Image 1 (tube, rainbow, N blue to C red):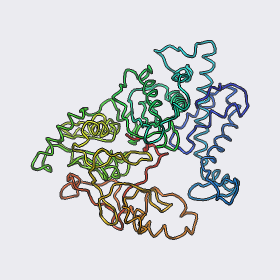
Image 2 (image 1 turned 30 degrees about the horizontal axis):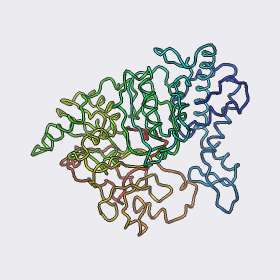
Image 3 (image 1 turned 90 degrees about the vertical axis):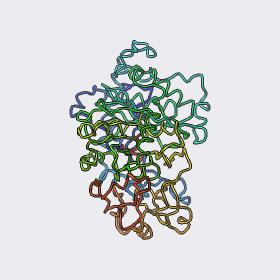
Image 4 (image 1 turned 180 degrees about the vertical axis):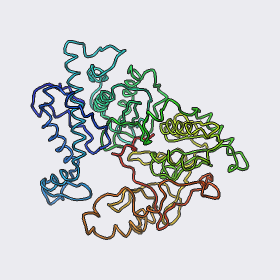
Length: 528
C-alpha cells in the first residue's frame, strides 16, 4: 500500500493506482476481512469498491503475463494453471471462473488497507508527519513518518550491490503481541519499497517474520528502522537479524501480508502460544549438548533426542549428526507427527532446531504442552547462527533456504546423493515436468542423459504432451509420492532410522522422488 497519495483524493482511478500495484494477488491465505468491512469504510472508499474489484482482477491477470514468441511482435500472452492464453478474452474467462475467490480476498484486503490509509491521512492533516508520538504507533500515524531519510543517498547507491555477489539477505522474526497488523503490513510494504527490497514478510497479531533481500546499504537501513521502531525496539536486537550473501535477485518480488500465524503450524496462536516455548540455548551451549549426545556409546538408548523441526527436503541436504529428521512435507504436519509418535518423546530431553529459530518457538511450545518430555530445549537463532559460530561443527551439509538460492554452504560436506546414480550431490533443481512441484537431486552426468525429473513417473509424464486440461493443473504432490505417509510413525520401526547420521532412503517405492518445490507464494515460504 505504500504511496504518498492520500486515500481521499476523489474517484480518479489513477490516484489510487499505487495503492494496488504492490499487492500479492496470488496469495489466498491473507486473513479474510470481517463481515462488517463495509461498515468500516468511509463514504469515499465505498465509492471506490467497484474500482478496487476491477483493479484486483486486472492485476491478477497481469501477474500471469508471459512474453509471446519472438515472431509475435510486441504481443503479450498469459499463462495460468499451466494453460497458455493468447488473447485477453480467454485469460479473463479463466480467471473469472477459476480464481474468483483469490480476486475477492485481495479486493477485500485492498479496501481494508484503504480504510487504514483514509484514517491515517485525516488524522495527520494538522500534525507533523515526521514526529508522531514515539510511545504510540498505530494506524492513526502515517506510514511515511516511519520511513528512513534516504535523501543523502543516490538511487544508484541504494540499488547498487543488489546482486548475489554484493547484496545481502536478511532473515529475522519477532514474537510480540501486535494490535494492528494491517497498519504494520502497510508500513512494511512502504518501507521495503522505499529501500528497494524484495522478499516475503508475514505479519500477525503474534508478531512479524521477514526475509528480505537488497543492497547492503538498504538492509542496514532496514535493520536500523526495525531497531528504532517503538513496537519492536524492546524485543529485537541486532543479533536477531541473520545475514547471508544474496540480494534482491533472490526473490522475484516483494510480498507482504497479514496472516493468523507468522509461521504456519496450523494451530491457532490462542491455543498454542509463543509465550511458552522451550529453553533457549545459545549456539555454544547447543554445541556442547550435541557433543555430549554424540559421545554416548548407544545413542538409541539415550535420554536425549536431537530433533530437526524442518521438512524432509531441508534435512535431506543438511542436518546435525545423529538427529531425528521427521519425514514430513510441511511444518503444519509437525503437531500430528508429535501426536503420532508421542511415546518416542516420553521422559526424553529434546534438543530442537530449525533454520532460524522461528519454527522451534511454537514447535517447542506444542511439545511442552503434551507434558511427556523431561525437558525441551531449542537452538537460539537456529542453524543459521550455529553455522556462523561453528562452520565445521556437528551440522553437516548445506542449509536449505526458501528463495532462489535453494541452499547456503558453510562447509564442504555432502550428505545427500543423486537420486538416479547415487553419486554425492546436493544441488536442487526443479523437476523438468511442468505439472510437478518438486525439487530434484540429479547430478550433471544424469542430467546429460536426460534424467531431469524427480522420478520415473514424472520422467515419463514429461515426455508426453498433455492430452486434457486436467493434466495442465498443478497437483499438491507429485504422483510418485502417493505412497509417502503424510504423517510417518517412527514407533513402527525397529529402531528410529533418522537417529543415524546416514541419509535415510525415501519412502516412495516406485521412484526416487525427492522433495516438494518451494512455493514462493506459499505461507511456508517465509519459514526460518
